[in-house]
Amino acid sequence: MEREILWAQEISGKIKSKMAVVAERNQHKIPYTTENGCFDDLTDKNICWWTNGFWGGIMWQLYHASGDELYRGIALEVEEKLDRNLMIHMGMDHDSGFKWLPTSGAHYRIDGDKASYNRLMLASDNLAGRFNTAGGFLRAWNDKRDGSRAGWAIIDCMMNLPLLYWASDLTKDPRYGQIARIHAQTAMKYFIREDGSVNHIVEFHPATGEFLTSHGGQGYRQGSTWTRGQAWAIYGFVLSYLYTKEEGYLQSAEKTADYYRENIPDEGGIPVDFRQPPDCTWEDSTAAAIAACGMLELSKIVKSGEKYKKTAINLLHFLADERCNWSLECDHILEKCTAAFSDDKHEFAIIYGDYFFIEAIWKLTGEELFIW
Image (cartoon, rainbow, N blue to C red; front, side):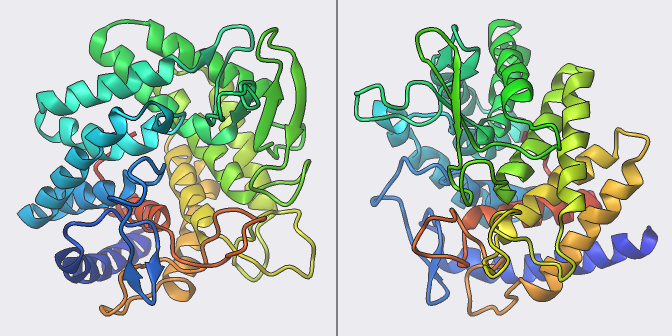
């Protein structure tokens, strides 16, 4: 695999060359997408948006790889801006891991910053407070105080569980990890189908915990297979295994990864949903980057790991060659990303696509700051 490492190093060099320019001209933003190739800024528009940690995460990854203080300064500014989110109750939800692990978590891992620790614990306590004891799950989105989503859980939350595992490790208080394990057990039972595909949303009775139904959510429809949700499952169950060594989580990661591998289109682009209509050509490149991250981690710990590594590298080759914009005039890297099948807009740039693409490449080069 020496050839693949050399290739990854080449792509890493292209990332660094581009991001040196992009970061310099976007120092005070928290971007989500681009407009005409220029990053937008959610600092004042929506400080509570779930993707707001990924720009800081990119900066910490770049700082870890290069030591350039520019990146550290930008990352610190994002982390401090997110303090506003901590003080908006309705802006706190199941995505606290996505917001504070790439920001405060990365900062704490680098130098043990006490303020970062405090932010992480505030986010961890809030996430733990979303646990439904009757159903054994972490509640997903908030609602308009009408209880309409009180019983909703989503597959994305598997990627937020590391915040709780982290809190248990740091405080030596098992409660956080217990909540994470129970949620993961519930996800194994109700989210993963027999064939290895996953539901996006599962609804429980919020008072009794009884399973009620599933929803298509950001996928094509109920019973379909949203590809980013499939990727969250792969990576999320791998992470739960790394923290707990529970074999069931590892088996779930393999099962969901095998389904993903078996359904990759021959032409290489990952659809928004593996079961979308044949005449629909919408793609979601973020689903490819996230799945590559999960499969690369999975490849390190299972006997059949080589097949997962090969698939991950194939996905990354396709993205680097066909779905990346390497122009220094354009702020984003990854193209043809889609947030949800039902959205009006498809195939645009989304910040977490860039984050997970960088993370995946640096898993191959050994430059990654592991934040999960």
